[in-house]
Length: 441
Image (cartoon, rainbow, N blue to C red; front, side):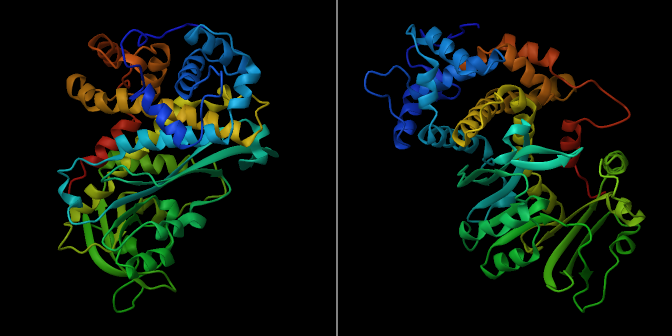
């Protein structure tokens, strides 16, 4: 295993974006302390894990060797085993929330969010795990075999970066069951932006009654009515239109009054969405012609009035979800949890600590490499930075983790980590960039 520690001789030692004393302070707050005569501090435990992960190994023996390389002291694998306890899991979870808060914020000059007390994003993402973990993190059944999938549920304030909710649940706990959890966080005058999975009309109604604003994409199949109560055929209403911005009643029973905004996508974006729908792995889905037609539009519902947001500002507000969406994508691209979590690790605290430590590493990668370079690379080269390629580069060039990204590294990333240009489909970053460039036409 490589013993790479460029920060040792640089005074205050930094791990990712945090000084070691900051990590120790958070560890103490969560009751993780160096034991009497002990050698394993929170910062050493974390740094040695990152180096072990970079080497592609994950056993306690490898972890002990990594710590010895950093400290010069002999450490047993049993000593590490005893340290991976609930206090350590809580410590790493708090560190992830802290780092996420540093990249979740919106630029203070973002006009579209002026006037809101807070802007809350509620989102989730799933991670496949070794099948043996299905007892704790139950997933889908594939070919008669129970799979293990963990789902990370996240609530973050995009104005301040505050992250009050970060929890790992089983994949079988769907977002709709967690939809009303936001009610205990928000206050009157706040704005909630939600992933489509949290679409529950009764919760939207409760948010509105509490003086809270919301923004969501429209769930397909939800009944729509005019303000006077007539049923609306949305494909017919949208036919021939590039933009629609009207008040409607939403839901066959709820009849919730909302503002519906639909913006037509360009032909390439629409074709990509249709292609993905037709290639859906669930063959039970038999999409209608109306469904495919509506894929040509991005459709929102909100209770923010036109006097506050113009039509295009609705899309501009929703696009801020991409900051966290990109973070989720980088987590998935870089975690490779099935490779890094030993099959014998069925203890909940140990599994969760592994997951949070990997999330912490990828969050630092996003904050220190991907976020600063993604637009600069596109501006200089005309190509988009690939999260997967950049994550693979980062694993093989770990010195950025301790000293930041220098000009030589930036040059390598620009050369090796961009998408190849393709004419037949959009890559992930092109989809995001196209969405950000939505035009009213």
